[in-house]
Length: 83
Image 1: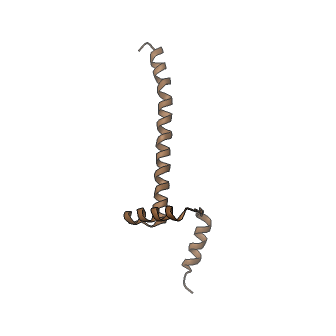
Image 2 (image 1 turned 90 degrees about the vertical axis):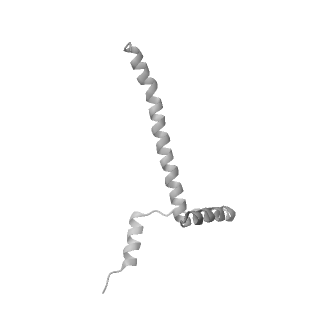
Image 3 (image 1 turned 135 degrees about the vertical axis):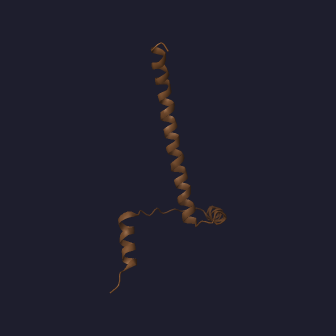
């Protein structure tokens, strides 16, 4: 017999994916759907991209916070060196 792509897909999904149920009000769904359609994306793809964008912003924000926290220490060490 041939391969079973559906069985493979289900096995892959079970091992590698995590479903996240998401409930939104109907009017919010329509707003998301309209934005997704304008962007040429599915609702699922639109939501995933929004999550990725937010995570990226959080990473950038955390990085900027670390840099800001290091600056006073660096400036203090430069001052104490007599520079």
